[in-house]
Image (cartoon, rainbow, N blue to C red; front, side, top):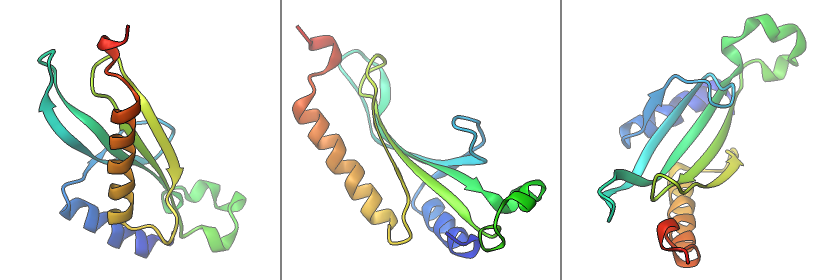
Length: 130
């Protein structure tokens, strides 16, 4: 995605309640994320049932690599979407995919909700597995 289009996307994400996090989870430049279904569960663990985390790889921030990056890619930003479901402290279900030019925030949020609902139907709560 070209940098200008990404800046528009980033602004729309922030307007929807997403926040920027500076961390080095997968060697990204930063993450933009939001939690969904925040609630207390039966173990009194206040947590979100799932998060959408968008790893941002902004090549424009790294001119030291421009000799290795084709000119047409130097003004681009790579995005990797992580839907991380964790209803309890000892559960982790992840879905990861690349953000495509045709993707929208609404489409990604709908996919995340559908993934969450499907996993809730087929995966028992971890502490109830017997």
